[in-house]
Length: 391
Image 1 (cartoon, rainbow, N blue to C red):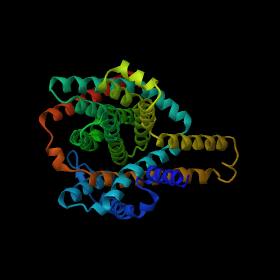
Image 2: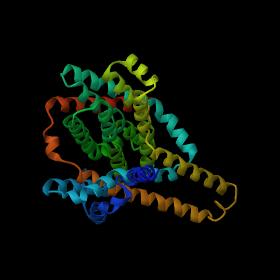
Image 3: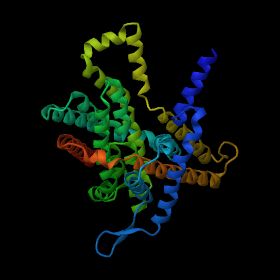
Image 4: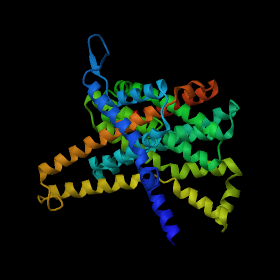
């Protein structure tokens, strides 16, 4: 019983922090570095500008600076192993915490409205990405495992989906790294290009730009980075909220697509369904793997959105919010939580930069590059067409 309780405590620690509670101090060096890059990027963001057209200049968004600084450090210097756990914690756990906090910026009415608006576009983009990547992988004689990894990474959730699918189909380590490098390459490009391109394509409509980013950019961190860059340049925080919610909904498709990819990859749908229905070790394993794909942080997002909704309702009813917060305090709280989420996103993107190995990206072959280009282009085009026609 004691051993079982200890294992549960360890599992909770790894779920919350990525390491057991006993190793939590190992996070400090990496978190200190990503926080330092936050401070530096915020300072640089006030002075670094780039020319756009003629004499027009814009400030370089802090989130882009944090990403670039992280990439420079990771590729000019050898990153000590002691800071790796903190970097991973920053890019994964703090990113998810920032997304959870965004839930406080959206009432449930906004969540349902944007969700209904984005769902058909998400389904079309996921389907298009899967078809394109699988078709090209077969034509270019790529391994079925690599094709599956690039397909799920492009269509749903970037790096997180690749890691989950890789474990599910028992992909080789180099295949997983190859797929991640491919997604990282196009994600980095999107952080710099999509804000300007989206502004041009949708005439500065923040809802459409946010939907486009949330449905067509691969990884969650890259969606957040592009959306925050847009928000800073054109003073449009709505883009961050729309893009984040759209990506959250898109991430939910992991619980459907990854198990299906696993089933198709192995022995065919019929045989795997029979395994899942049978009692025993295989059936338990299949059910366990299926449940693990649900992004738990989405629950936190919904809970905070519900808290925001109840608070707004109390405010409109003329009473104090939760019996202790007045209208001014409520507005300040919403603003404060928004600032905290932005800070967490910048720290997370610094972690993404520090985890980016340009050598691995350079090692990508032409075939994987072509598959990535085609998938990104088709997803972006499908999203643009549907948003233009329906929103």
